[in-house]
Length: 212
Image 1 (cartoon, rainbow, N blue to C red):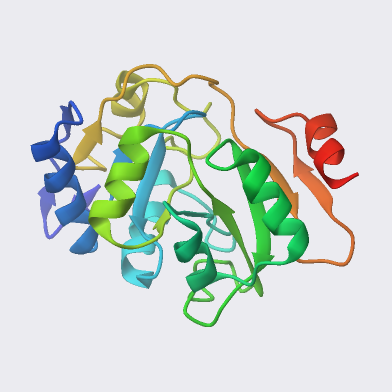
Image 2 (cartoon, rainbow, N blue to C red; image 1 turned 90 degrees about the vertical axis):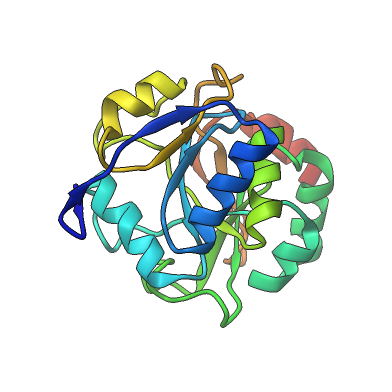
C-alpha cells in the first residue's frame, strides 16, 4: 500500500505506555493501527472518521458495503454511538467486557459509511488490557475488523498480522497470542427479535440463558 508515495514501514511494538501513546496518536491523526483483543487481532481506526475507516477497507481489500463494528472502553461510549435497550443492558452486564458484539440502532454521530449504509451498528467491549488502553488513549470508539487480508484466516499473533499486512499498517501492538483465537459472537438487537448472526467465542446457549 502506498500512502503519499511512501511504502509504510511496519513496526511490531510491545504495548508499553510509550508505545500505546504513540499508537493512539496515529489513531487520532486518522491512521490505522493493529492491536490484540481476546479473540483475534484487530485493524483499528477512529470509528467516527470516514477517511480513517477507508484506510481499513483499502488495507484489507474489504468490500466497501461490509459494515465495521465499533470497539469501546465504557458504557458511556456505547451510549454515545448507539441506543441501548433493556435487553442490551442485560447482555452488557453479563458478557462485557468480553467476546460479544451487540448490534444496536446507531446514533447520528456514527457515519453511514462505517455501517455500510445500515441504521444499526455493532458494538464490542473487548476484554483485553491493550485494546482498552488504546481505546481510552485515542478517546474515540475504534472500528476494528480482524487484521488480515479479506478471505484469509483472522490472525491470532502479531507475526500473523505482520505476514498479512506488512506495508499496509504502521504499528502492530504485540500483546501475545490471543486467548480465544476465534472471532466474537454477534447478536442483532436492532430488530424486534434477537438473532445470532455469527457464532463465536461466547456460546449461543449462554446468551439465551441470560435472555431467558
